[in-house]
Image (tube, rainbow, N blue to C red; front, side):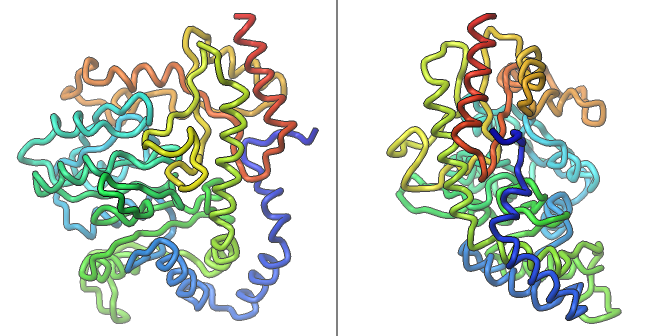
Length: 386
């Protein structure tokens, strides 16, 4: 059996090595490293894939989220509601812009932001909601959009973990994640479902005026060289990363299908154990993990263990050569940087439970059946002995 990797970027690279190598060499030969033809070509191809009017590439996913908020013209003191159970970048950019982060609880089954908690947190100062499509599954966008419309709020999708995922609305219409709200951000960090070989990100929107504003922001506020019309930043996707992403984008659906297939095998092997709660698909689809749609693209395969010492299980897996992760071990509302007397522990029962129970298993496009069998067998042996 091959060594188990949490993310097997080498194995994935081997499948597209010739194309990637030649594309990178072509960029180097052209010397068009910044805002070159490869960046513009990738932008157009991603717009077509996502069915959005505007993709604006930038330097990383955190910048993408910050720039999206800057483009909306949010002002210091404006409140932005987002999930307590997610990576810190989501709340980090809110604080950096001197906006007021408002953290709310999540749903137990999907791990995504709880619309009812959002509704309760709205005040006259609320200006935006940031649903995070965590681990590869869209938040409840029917409910989020309804709340936003009712209160005249912006919806900013944090799509760093769900590129390629789709959302089916109650009326049967379907949109790709990132093309649902007023604006969205994504990350092309190497381990993402669509990852480059360094840092990269992008902003998506169907709003022409907002796209124009954002294109200036990412380039020092310039639309014409040395004419600075808005306050901007220096955040650009370089041509080498763009050409790598161009090579990988045609494979994205296949990559996501491989992740779904691995998730099915994990689920089947772990089924029937009362101490294990496997990932839940929240939409009423044709199977526990879809075969006909992409409602969950499994950036992470995250399960819950109940009445089990989760940290001891992590240690046991590591001792057996199985990498794993705990995403996330500390709620944002308890992080030193984001503590606030406004928060009441009683408002976060699900998040406070999840941080004690979640564990993410190896998930990537190159997982083999033998590896999945060994991982699940090792988990079950530990739990059955506990």
